[in-house]
Image (cartoon, rainbow, N blue to C red; front, side, top):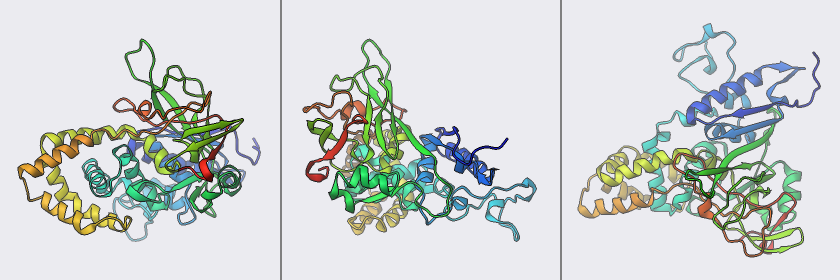
Length: 416
């Protein structure tokens, strides 16, 4: 059967499951990139890709992959003959045929690094909080930005390790939806879909997470689906329940850069908003995979009970993490941080234990939180509903914003 040379009505779903989901999804996209129809890969003819959790680690990065990394390196090459696979490096065999080697630029390199292990991530979160002042409810997103996105130039860090970038579909979309209505954003770093030359055409991305809402006479936690795309972010449907302000959520979304904002004025179809910063890729990737933040919270709880476990983890990972951070955070006082790591590994005084216990208590609340206002009726006095964005333990979390018919304009040309 001859198919048209346009994307078909086919979508790819990349499920959650951490590094296992990432690995499985990498093989699936690799197979679709290898299979050909009408002289083009099936992956290049796919219309949409929907991701969550570990699938978002792969799918969002793939969607925005720049010119510095090829699809072949990112996904690895397909090996047609299983008999050519070897366990370790052997002359005459390519990296794709070598089971203990991944090519430079492959997404699997990040999750196979021991600094991506749970105790190392917990130590890194502690150091980000301790020495860069990263807010606890952004620590998980920062970790995902540093490990998943940064190797591909997709995480631009500002003060406190908070992202200083935004994302959109392509240059015309960026101009019409973001920088045109908000000229002050023209100087912001903007990540665009598949800007890399020579890579396959990208499908339409939907990155999935959820927002906790209240339901009367329901004892369990209820999650309203939140979708983030290169065009808009929000709750598209009309889920039951209410947000922290008692309002019904849903009804659409705003241009993604303006998500997590507070409306200050409504005039016709234009909404003026106050916003601390633009929504970034680290936000959607981190919020989509925030179920794993619970694992870190549990570890912090254990360390609070026995701070010597924290000191041992600092001894094992601290110096390597700080050396890595020195390249990314100029504001980090490397000498002070290194002195802290070295002191923490040898001191077991009451004061040191008390300090660690206090820090560990604060770090047991890592679930991402964002400002939310429902699309149906933004109003002039909508309060931020950050607490409505807190999920139950083990569930992804985020928040959403206004209707597709609303054009979001920032105060004084730029969210503040």
